[in-house]
Amino acid sequence: EIVLTQSPATLALSPGERATLSCGASQSVSSDYLAWYQQKPGLAPRLLIYDASSRATGIPDRFSGSGSGAVFTLTISRLEPEDFAVYYCQQYGSSPQTFGQGTKVEIK
Amino acid sequence: QLQLQESGPGLVKPSESLSLTCTVSGGSISSDNYYWGWIRQPPGKGLEWIGSIYSGGSSDSNPSLKRRVTISVDTSKNQFSVRLTSVTAADTAVYYCARPGKEWERGGFDYWGQGALVTVSS
Image (cartoon, rainbow over all chains, first blue to last red; front, top):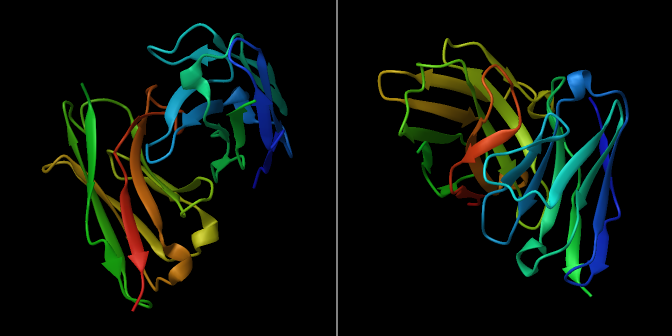
């Protein structure tokens, strides 16, 4: 099973700042099948990025994904008030699919 | 617009079985090449993939659930289901059904149900 480790656990930033979230895999993710989700309290996760760097439909271009192999990054170029949430990475290149433990982006 | 909706009991007794159904609307579960998945989230915790099924019936599930989980599909009703046997309090969670955004890919879930809270308690 591939273990995904997200860092930091919590990121305290101000609106307008840049957020950089990391996701490290215990082994290489096949075909870079890595996704990023945003989740707000009481709601289902929302897909932001799939296949490591492709933005999902309707996702603003301030969200970008990069990386390959075992190291991946989600960047939010300029934080908007609605971006404060928990973010998860997920690998689906091998079974079982696994999720990281999440990074909470909170208002500083 | 594709929509998914979970349904099933909200309370299950320990050692019994949990069964949930996901009804798909706005699209046919069998018309395209998609996998359909179940994910759960214990209160205040992270996400766990339970398993996925293809419309043709082939399925895959998380070994962490050992042999307690069964995922099935009913194309005539445009539904797919999950059954988890011998439940304990550790199975208390919000259960989501979801579908990837890209054909043939097993993850990158773009469409989600609203989630169904299942509590395991006597």
